[in-house]
Image 1 (tube, rainbow, N blue to C red):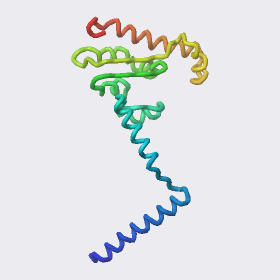
Image 2: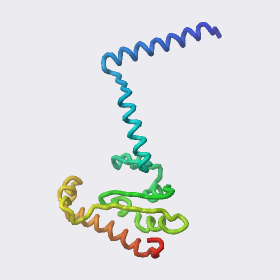
Image 3: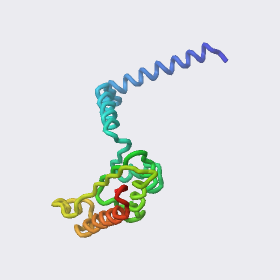
Image 4: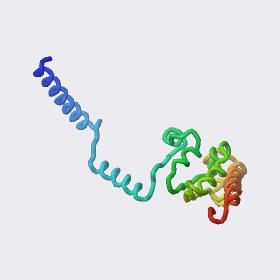
Amino acid sequence: MDWASLALGILGSIIATIIISFLAWSRGLLSFSLGVLRSSFLLQKRLKQAGFTNFYASRLDYAKYRGAPRLVDYLGTAKKRIEVAGYWMAHGNEAEGIAEEIANFVKSPRSLEVTISIIDPKSSYIDALANYLNLTTDELTLRIKSTLSNLNLAKERLSEEED
């Protein structure tokens, strides 16, 4: 192997990369901003300090990134606390019967702190939300009440210490 040819090839590749990057940047095809990089880092740092370990912007993200076949499997990866905010825990409530599984997370030896926030089915924005979700108001209200009822039944089965 000719080391001089190898070194010249590597050097040529580096120079070509720099030239192409500069041309792309000067034409607006490649933009790099330290300010954007810094603000992204600061946002990530604040979210981590606030206790966020994951965030799903859509159901597609949820299915892609959760790394567990069922919602209960994903929630089961928690070490200290589970916090859920949602419309009605659609798939978990309707397909997986998640309420009892969540109640089991509160019991010893797991003893996780669990907070679940579900939309109030009597709130003034139910009509607008139903329209947004392409559901009837009655269907949305029924789904929310079903989730709340299942969660409440599971909670009632817990002892006073576990509640």
